[in-house]
Image (cartoon, rainbow over all chains, first blue to last red; front, side, top):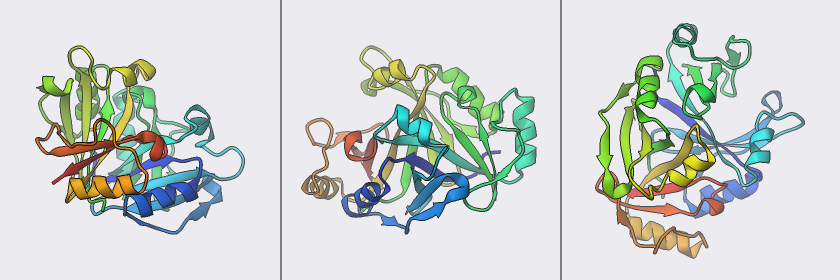
Length: 134
Length: 134
């Protein structure tokens, strides 16, 4: 069921500093910051040859990464996103196996404009998993 | 400087349960457990089309992931490993930029038999970064 790792997301308290780390210190190719107010984040992509890393900074009130950054003020790895071919089939299979889908269980349109779901970290060894239909 | 994401490592308290989650619930291809006493872990690879996820369970006394699991008893994302062409050149560049290398700064032979270094998470937004020469 799991396809490619679409991205690994890292929550950061200061996006400019993070961009500087990845671009200058680590020598990676980094995109321009993109504000996604409907998702409560500003995002930058670190482009790697086989996948990407998303650097996420909170944007506005009630950002979905604010609680994480309160617990981890320096930042840290927030979630991993896997591609799936059919997100409804994936959801139904997961539910049947007893895994919990976050929210109301209906896919939302994610930051890349594709349907996404998040799985409960308690069902997956403390790791927040995003599934994205591609 | 950064090449491919070689793997994302997830520390888990119970490797059998984690294997069951990834194999049965998520439908991924998972390798047989491999005990690496010299690294203090038992490891399983979740094989994805573009990279892999390493599931790590502590092995023996003083495992390098024990402290992490004490803080995160359910488990969680532990580090991300990027490939580099020349680990000594990478280390020297990082040091020049003021980044801290863990340990004595000399590459060790990692779990894949290749030279590796770990970078201080405080210099990289709370994310533990491994570099592996390939």
